[in-house]
Structure formats: C-alpha cells, structure tokens
Length: 374
Image (cartoon, rainbow, N blue to C red; front, side, top):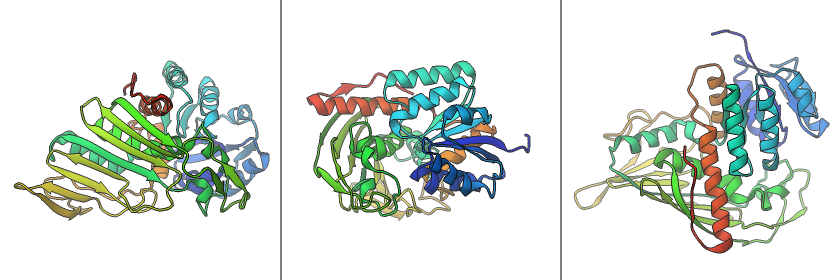
C-alpha cells in the first residue's frame, strides 16, 4: 500500500465537524490529508481550515462544492444539514469522489436508491453514518446473536432521549432545524438505535408508530443563539414498534422532550438471556450487563469483562473511539483497503425507509410494511 496520505474534504463546517470529525481526522493525520473545508458560510470554512493547518497546511477554504471538487479530493465527508445530503452527495459522486454522508443518506428512498446506483456505476465507495455497526460493541452483540450462544433473539428495546440540541450546553450551532419536520428526534438520534438493532437483528418487516409534541417551545441554552426560543413543529416524543423479518420484535423511543433518564440505551433479549447496554455510547460506556436464564430462574453474570467476556460469550474489547469517530475511521480504512465496508448505503436506505414509514404511521395510525432490505 502506498504511504501517501488519502486526500479528503469536509463539506459542512458546523458543530459536529469541530466537535467530532476534525479531531477524528487529526488522529488519522498519518493516513489522510485534508485538502479542503467547504461551507456556504465563508467564515465557517475558514475557521475549519485554520483548525487543521498544523497537520494539513495546504488545506483550502471554499464556499461552493464545485470549488472543493476542483481541489481534487479522493473522498469527502458530507456533514451538511439533512435536507442537503442527497444533493451534495450526488454532486460529489458525479465528480468521481467517494463519499461518507452524515445521516440520513437522503430524504426519500428513491433518492437513496439513486445515490446507490450512481456510486455502483462509478465504482465509488458510499458509506453513511451513524458509525454504530462498526463499533466493537455492536459487532460483539451481532456475533452473539449470530452464534446462538444465548439462544434466539426475541426482543430489542432502545431509546435516545433528551431535550435535543437546544438543551445541550456544548452545542454551538443553530438548533432550529432539529425541531422541524425534516429532522426531529428520530432522524437526529433515534436513527442510532435503529442502525444498532438492525445490525444485530437484521431487517425490519413492519413498523407502527405514535408521536406527539410534548414541549412546544424551547429556549436555546448555549451558542450564538442562547436565549432565543424555538417553536417545535414536529413530534418531539416518538414511539416506534418494530417487527423484524426474523420474527423478533423491537421498540424505540426517540425524544427531544425528556429532561433526564437512567434507562439503558439498548437491551437485546434472547431466549436464553439478555444483554443490557447503559451509559453514553458517545463517551466511555460501562461494560454491558449480561443476564443468563438459569434453571427456572434468571441468573446474572454482572458486567461483562472487557478482557475475557462472560462465560460462553466472545470477548469484548473497549472501543478505541466513540460512535462518530468510529464511522470516520472506518471510512478511511475502507478507502485505503484496510477494512471491508460495514456502514453501507443499503443499510442506511433500509433504516431511512423504516423512519419514513414510521412517520406515515403516526399520521394515520396504521402499520406500514417495509419494502427495502440490506
């Protein structure tokens, strides 16, 4: 393999770029060179470029995607707001550039399919956040499900609940879009649980959902808009019931109206035991809790050892990076031929299909069949 660094660009230089992606790329500075930062706000592009010049001194700052394309990156990270994901990704694919897109991949299943076809026709790599399925923790959980060591997976229960970006004291951007119909708690956060559940249990066959606006007005607590108020125009509590193709069931709570919670972020139940994941997957979550079904009663093994695993289970090593950073590192590894793609666009399209059908279900109360798979 060439020791040359892979030339990459970043499109969208907002909060997540500075908090997650730029530090992740800096940690990969021996393998990647950032040739351009692009944002419709020239000052944002300049700020991002200034932040990386110590390891990518030739980086440029651009306000138009076509100008970044002229800098000849081999790959780009599409970190624009969700409504622009498909347009920006399409523009880059047409120029022969590999793409890692923030979630969701597109605004419709048809758009997502068009992007997949374009990437396939040009032999390009198209991956999509979140990075959940590439984490060691979710790979470990998927191995348990596939091996049958705890029996058959029967139920997954997950949540991503808080007050959303308007209530985050470290959020620096404009959180308004997150409380409208094109984003909301499912697209922004619940999608993590959906990716994890489908990585472990496989495709969803049917979804039914309910949603409501619980807290209709928000006050921004941090950043340049601190003190401003936001009108919530899309459901901020969303409950989704899932039927997987395997016959297992699932339930996901996605909420921007929960002040605090101590509930596990994901539990997977098997015919012979349960695995409970607690803490925050964005930080350093504690070891999973493993519960085995004993002779007529449930027996607990307590937290799993990160070195040896619980009895009969594969070992679980701690993730070297959090979810978002894992996605960035996985994309770079795939570009350089060091890993095979896990965060596929087909998987992202399937989860998008589940999300869109869930909102249709909220509107009329009926369940929806899911047409896609991965």
